[in-house]
Structure formats: structure tokens, C-alpha cells
Image 1: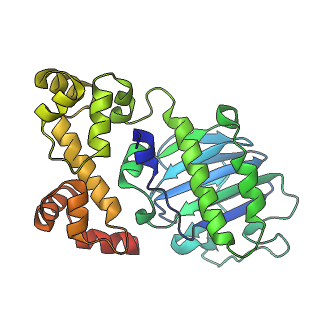
Image 2: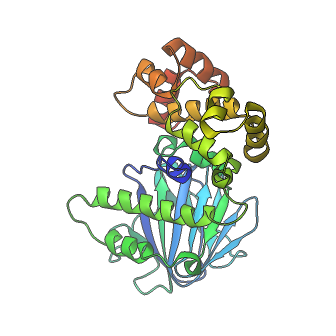
Length: 313
């Protein structure tokens, strides 16, 4: 498993909220749903994503914005347009006065807006629960990133737009997988930019640190020491420790501990996984050893983490 695959492999939408918005200016949607991650893709027209803290970002056709929650933001035709609609947790939509809004008749399934011929069309896909996403992925992302259509020229945006208008058997599964593909493709493009990826991802190309990282990532259950790792990559213990810390930002064994515990956090989401089985897969000798390390880093026990991931807390 390469570093990017390991980072993105946790994206698994399950009944994601997907909405096609067809709008004429002026429009402004205030998003307060506290979702852990949202993908916004522009099909037609223009729009602005306006974070509460941060600079507004313009979207043109083919552009994709990825927003890391739970902070609120606004999507509008212009940053100065005041909000007209508020989207709350559970995707409950109201006016600013709290009056409920329903889907717009005549626009088709999963579609809302001002009319069928609106000049702006955008797609919004929301991951509902933190358990649908790797903790490593969320911590690696900024609050807002934008990949432009010129950056990648992907067919996924028009494909998702087409599939969102259908209501065939199994459509929810199709849309979940398309949302995952769109997210992964956008992030792969974004991580390829200099200075955007985590330090350990950027260090994967180093001739010494890269092989060491791959060994730790591919076999975290092995009882690694710095000496054993250095012997595998053919350098001295001191040279590996120095270069690894310089490029990754932390010593090899500190990275390994973090890697093991984030893998454990992801594995614990699996319905049939036991703490003992997860402990063995990530290199801890007993459920007690994993529980102690997990609580020290995450502040909760593995069992409490599993319940929180399932409920979204």
C-alpha cells in the first residue's frame, strides 16, 4: 500500500446526502450541518464558497471544493449576498426565520432550486459521520481546498450530475461510490501540488526515508526497532533516525505509534472487529496494551471510539 492509498482508503460514503442545486442569482445558502466533510462541484455558472474564517473561493464549471467540517460556511453567487436558506444538521433546510423548506416540485429527484433553467448548477455531497472517513485524512486536509477543472479535467463531475437525476434500483450505492471517486480524484490532484501533502507523504520519495515509511505502513504489526528498520533500508541507525525526523517531522517509532493507532481507529469501525483482533493487526501484544495506548492518544477507549464513530459523536 502506497502512502496516498493508505490515506484515501478510508473514504467510504454510506447513504451520503447528495443534492443538485439549480439556482438563479442572487442566492446564498448558509451551511450549518456540522458534517465532517463536504464536496461541492460546479456544473454550470459560477459560485463562491465563503468560510466563516478564511478567504472566499470562486468556483467555475468543473471546479471541486472540499470542505472539512464542522465549521459553518456559505455558498453564494457573490460573497456579499446575504444568506437566504440555512441547512441544519440532518440536512433540515429552513429560511432564516426557521420556516421549513421542502424539495422543489418539477426539478427531479435530489434537486432543489429556483427553477429548471437556473443559470447555476452545483452538486453537493456530504459525508454524514466521522466514521465514514479516516482520521488521518481529516487531519491532513485544510478547512477548504479547491481543485479547478483545468487542474484535472475529470469526467466524474458530469457523470455524478447525470446519475443524481436517476432513481433506479441500487442508485444509493452507485452515488456513494461516485462521491468517493470524486473525492479521491480531487484529493489526489491536490496532494500532487508542492507543499500541500503531509510531511510523511512528501518524504515517501526520499531514497532512505521512503523505503522505511513503506515498511512501517505495510507491516505495522512487526515488532520494529530503529535498528531493525535501519538494517532493512541499508543505513546506520543514527543516519535513519536523523533523516527520518528531519523529513517526516517525528522519529520513526513515534510515527509508527501514530500510524498503528490511526489504523486501529479505522479498523474498529468494522462491525465484526474485536479489540483483540485489531490489536494483533496493528502490532500490540494484547487488547489491554492497545486500549492503554489508544486512550492516551485519543482520550477514549477503543470501545467508546467504536460507539462514537457509529453515532457520529
